Length: 120
Length: 131
Image (tube, rainbow over all chains, first blue to last red; front, side):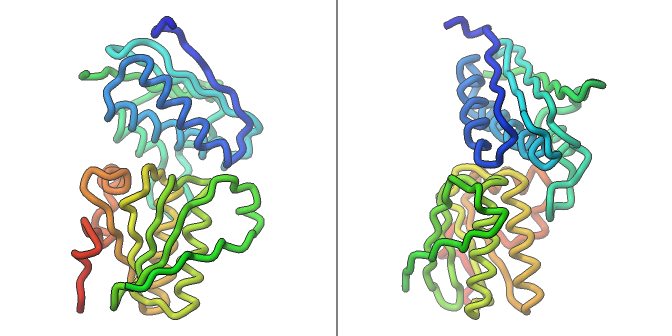
C-alpha cells in the first residue's frame, strides 16, 4: 500500500457512525506514520468535525487524510458551523481545533483543511 | 463497596439511534456514589451518561463521582454531558467529581479547552475527599 495515497471516507451524517469516522482517521494517520499523539489529535479532530456535520443536519460527511508523516493534510467536506459552541460547553469547535493544530482553513465551499507536521 | 450494574437508560428520541452502548456500573464509596464508565464518549453515547447521572440524582445521590479511567475517548459532546451533569447536581445542592488519570483522554481535553477550573478532577477514586 502506498502510504502517500489519500483514502477518503464518505458516510451518512448519522451519530452512530462517529466511531467509524474515528477508526478511519486513526487508521489513515497510522498509515502515514504519524506518532501516537498526532493520531489521537486527528481522531479527536475527526470526531469534532463529524459531530459538527451531524448537528448542522447535513446528509453526508466526507473526510480524507493525506500526505506523509512530515507533512499531512486533513480535508473534511460539509463539516457544519465550527463557530457554533457544542451543546453545554463554553467554547467553539474552531477554538478547540486551533488549540490542537494552530490556524486552519475553511474554504468558501465549506471544506475544512487542517495541515500539520509530525515530530516523529 | 457496593456494586450494581446500571440499568440501561430508557430509550428516548435522541438515544434511539445509539448503537454503541457505554458500559456503566454504579458503586458506593461513601460518601460518594461512583459511576464507572467504560467505552467512548461522543455525540452518540453522551446522552446515555447524562441520563444515567440524572437517574442517580433522582434516586437521591448528591455526591457523584464519574470514573473515566476506562474511557478511551471523549470529545466535546462528552464534555457537554459532563457539564450538564454538573449543573444538574449543583441545582440539587450536590456536587460532581471526575476521576481521570493524567494523560487520559478526558484530562487532555479539559486542558485543551481551558475548563480545568470548572471541574474537580482526581487521579483515582482513593483521592476523592472523604469529608
